[in-house]
Image (cartoon, rainbow, N blue to C red; front, side, top):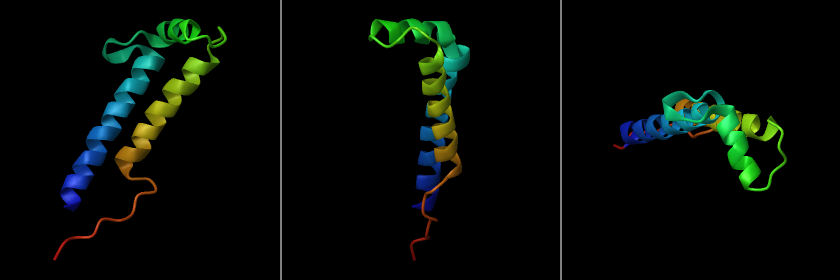
Length: 79
């Protein structure tokens, strides 16, 4: 059970890191800050680059914290 939860944390965290870096740097086929900025403008947000930076950084950092298990309870082995 604990191995499964560990793998789930790694997979979900890695997916979030990848999606955040798409927003920030354009890695993995993303549009980068300019594309994210245009997307946010289409949604009606102000046209500065602060919101795309915050969105990408929050997603990448959150994914990293999930992957390393920050604030998750320690796993217990089933007997």
